Length: 167
Image (cartoon, rainbow, N blue to C red; front, side, top):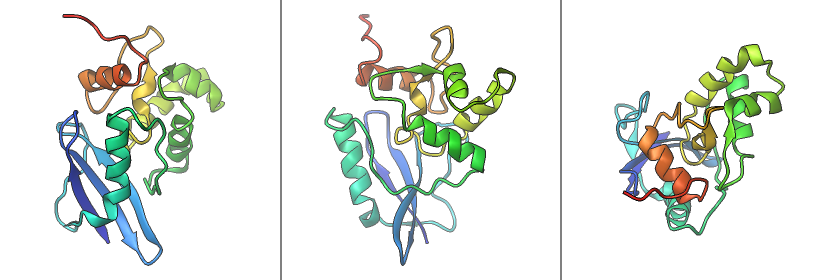
């Protein structure tokens, strides 16, 4: 059964969806308000906060700086290639960034096919949990984050990968 909950965060209310079965619970998506391509809590989903207790506890710990790596049961769907790219995102350490090109190289994807890596990253359904926000352009630009550039900068600043800017 597909269930959802909403979790208040410094980035706005996060929509969390997951699957419950006889085998337990697995998180299927984490999305932000205004995110392009974000799922909705619509038809076929039922609100049930209980299965998300571990997820919301880890999110709260992340936002207070007490957690640097999520350890959750995940079931994000996707193609075999997308899942391979998403799994590689898990290995980008907290507080660091890397480029799309470096990720492609790590995966053995030819430079001519780097856009496929970018497309897979862009389809990541587990924002924050699978840290696609840690990918930046080769020129240091904050490109390609479905949650928006301001949120990407906030996350990287929160993790210490960027220095806060004074206004």
